[in-house]
Image (cartoon, rainbow, N blue to C red; front, side):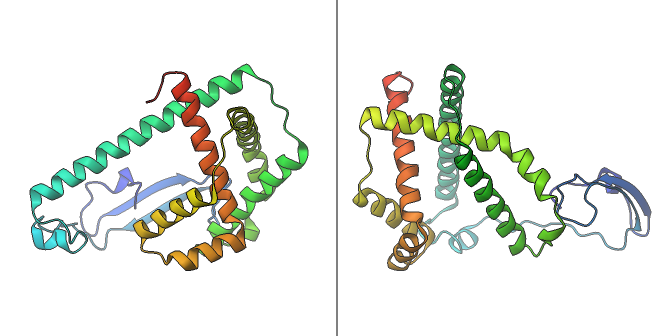
Length: 228
């Protein structure tokens, strides 16, 4: 798995092992909130062998790349872009934290309840798709743990909405359509079908709101001289 068990490292075939694991209260498994002792025997050892990096292997997923060097340059560019996005996201989060520390934004109870309800629906759908028994979860605790983040999300949206209005920032239908089209092309999705579903489910307006907030943040950073 993603988290290796130290007690298994260095073991040979037919050797026995024991280890303990503490499961958090919100773990989706039947062991949530318990400390479980495991005992077993090494029956099989598998070694992961990576394929040789050559043009034939690369072209299976990247048909437009014609050499190993070109692929390495492509990967380096992707890594740099990822680091740049991470740095930009941190800058935005730091800005939001600074702004929220300077103002007191009350959170209306209906907005808070809607945000918590949205989060619970999101968690339930995600776990249901993974075949977890969502009826066994402590939803009251999950809701309580999420509340501070819910309050911050609402305060962030209210804060940026105020700036967006003052700066006169609006997102046109055409800009939303361009964003959806680019997303569909990048992920191999049917544009016309996605547009129809987005409008029916209200996702179209959610995208407009997200783009408006992103543009608002960008303009604030530009006015502060923190971004070109």
